Image 1 (spheres, rainbow, N blue to C red):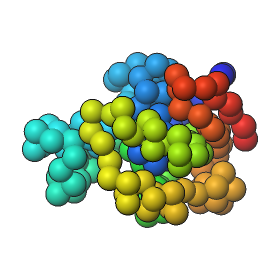
Image 2: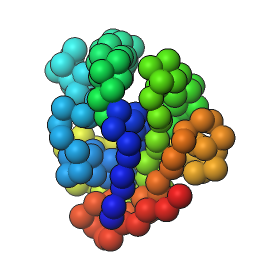
Image 3: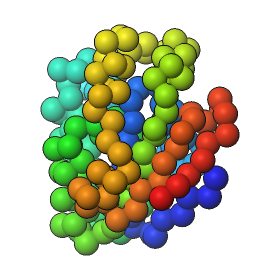
Length: 166
């Protein structure tokens, strides 16, 4: 799969737990490009699963996001980004720094996500996976929100060939 982005682009990974976002990011981009809320929650509390640390993790992410975008460095946001206000905030940061914002939508079937979830170090409860399924936007929604480009992934990296589309 050939995803290309202009230098300095903010790339937001959008999808539920177990969709393969982190694996995809790890294989595709340098670690320095990737900002991950799970990592910042773990740094703050010794647990990536501790959702009470999300506000401080988001502050850390914003600080690093602004540092990178102000330098026109390509940046990848590795979180679920399923809530519209979260995506709106990220688009606003990109606009502030006059950088393009692209989304990679992980439109992976729930059953596939469930299977992937069982192999993860941190298993997400099934009711959370179901809730996330209801929040998944369409590519059209993401474009309407202000993303300049949307690629769609339909299978997690490593399980089956993934495909991209606009």
